[in-house]
Image 1 (cartoon, rainbow, N blue to C red):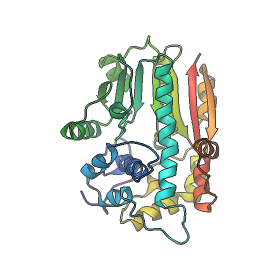
Image 2: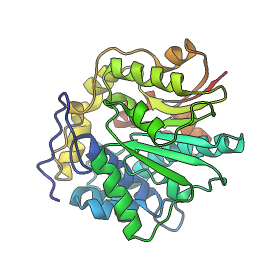
Image 3: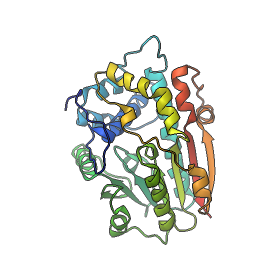
Length: 308
């Protein structure tokens, strides 16, 4: 695959692989996980991120993964250390979410828009746990085949559900054995901004309808996506262009006014806890960056919710 021609403009019914549109962001996230897993003192441990990024084959992401990031004098936040710390915060949050859920007895999990997520292969799942991964068919097929070719085996009963979230993913999930009478741990990592506001509401309505008492949700969201795009969208796209990647981040997200996630879930019976990014950095022993180019990332909210 070659960079420079990655299509990013969203449209109704659009699709993607791991080198185009929203799929490219999944590869970028995996590249950052690989970066954070490197060195004598790695911040996380994801041994599968690097081979997956190599298999996608986009040079810009491979250079990022290897720490070959071009640092601009006016953008000191775009460094391997900053990128690794930010991804460590995010990865540890969702890892801990699942580990605490299974410790509490939850034995069914769902990863929405799973991309290159490798938790089915690297977390210590208790016996009897079932983990569903939902994503576009070509994304599911690529990851499953690539990891099988590497000799990697899931540490859980992994059940991929190859379907677009805009289609009848609820029916497909049930068709793969999902049991709505059991508590479920759901994660939507790096997803909500790529959904139109009404689709975000439908997603949580469906999750609520499928969830037994004791179910949990883990997600991250930005309260005002329009503000983030206006403040940092061009800058974020410029970072990609410096790496030779024609990826316009602003074209990928939906900026319309949307319901606050915590309030929306609270109205539907979920008990929510929200932590801001600076708090999460401190929780992980990192100093939150004060550079102006990092300020936009300080508005990410990390949410956990439990259905009473």
